[in-house]
Image (cartoon, rainbow, N blue to C red; front, side, top):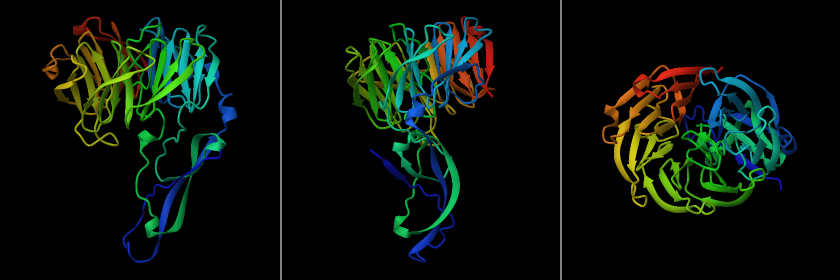
Amino acid sequence: MKKIRPLFIALTIGLSCFSCSDKIEETYLVNTPEYLSYEDLRASYTMKSAQSIYQPGKIYFKDQFIFINEYQKGIHIIDNSQPEQPQKLSFLEIPGNIDMAIKGTMLYADSYIDLVTLDISDINNVVEVDRDEDVFPYIIPAFNEGIVSEVDESKGVIVGYSVSAETVKVKRDELMYGTFPMWESTFFTADALSSAKVNGGGSGTGGSMARFTIYDDYLYAIDKASLHLFDISVNSNPSFTKQIPISWQIETLFPYNKNLFIGAQRGMFIYSLQNPANPEFISEFRHATACDPVVVEGDYAYVTLRGGNLCGAIESQLNVIDISTLEYPEMVEAYAMKEPYGLGIDNGLLFICDGSAGLKVYDANDPYAIDDHLVAHYPDINAFDVIPLGNILLMIGEDGLYQYDYSSVDQIKLLSHIAIN
């Protein structure tokens, strides 16, 4: 069935006399969608030679390999058997890809509205073995400014826009003011990086801003309001099982100790995974509106709240939340930050990607005095997300993938850096 969505978000120019006439001229930058047909989308997967990294997204680690999403393009595979000398191996071209997760030898990746399953048992010959069609909401990609003309879903998925200026006369009561939220522009947000931690079942490890994660025999994925469940007990053939409404503006997933922690712009939700096929709500912790990945260790959840732009008007900060009683999470302390994104926790060592303020490393064993225990600070990088792996830290930022050896907390050292073009 043909679906056409009129999207009129106006940029007004020169409205100095609002009551001068019944009609006024309005100038728009019109973004006309360019489409990739569904047939071409579903024949588009290709494995290519190693490529330069231009716009990194999620990072994921499995066995000796690092997987880096190239935003809406695909996945870079890096051999990390020697962290001092990581080697780019190949690029998996997957149009519309933003997220990934791995169980055993199967890699799961979104491709616009589809879920693609890739067999990575032979890392030099990664093949598509399954595709679940139309399991994710239709994507309207981000645009810089102006309005989007009519969207016709029957033509395929939107891969870009042609832009033109258009001046039209409209009635005053036809003007529609507003913005097109960037977080609404994709099913899996453009803000991002990551996956999740402590999964079991031979799955990999990701960072703090996950929208894909695996627990037991289930792949969980979120859109901006719901949790999608896929049975991957037969891991080469995922089966969609259900969709669970959560809340508006949910952003991240983090499984820990048979529970699922969901970060949202207005709070943190805790769900029990005692029955992985049927996550059950336990509690909710409310905070001011902000973008907020969450990680958990022991009795504490660590949440970075980033204000500004579309994330909220609060001052950016780190929140430490006592979850010793899951039904009643309580705030312990809040610490000022500049513009925090992802974070990671490993045996009391807290890593925070504070945007342009760089990577910060804290001893978090005293939750009431974290800011008094700054272990290391790398201010000259724009940090985005991390994956702590025991003694090795993976950190991705605007200018590349960094690896640090933190086996000696007093002597954290840089091991390698892969530059981003």
